[in-house]
Image 1 (cartoon, helix red, strand yellow):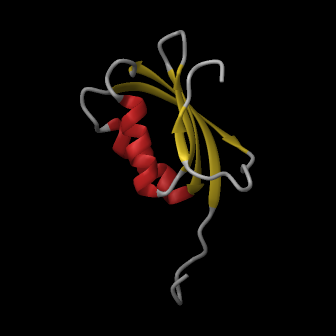
Image 2: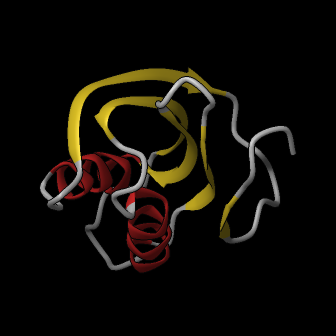
Length: 101
């Protein structure tokens, strides 16, 4: 941490995305963005056409992720439901999951 830099606030969110979110590359876009922002967690398609994510990292980067994923055509996020979760201690990396894993 640089001198004078505020401490980072770590958070974990469950995010359920609806809209045009399947068959548009959202999961792999999320993978790329989360790796770039050094977020951990996972993403998967849900059988009802929505996409679920659990993302963890610096609160500023979580917010940055949501802004960036919403601006990636042809993805069109109509609604993002966010639920705070307890941190997953020791989690490493970000992955694409299959429903039921």
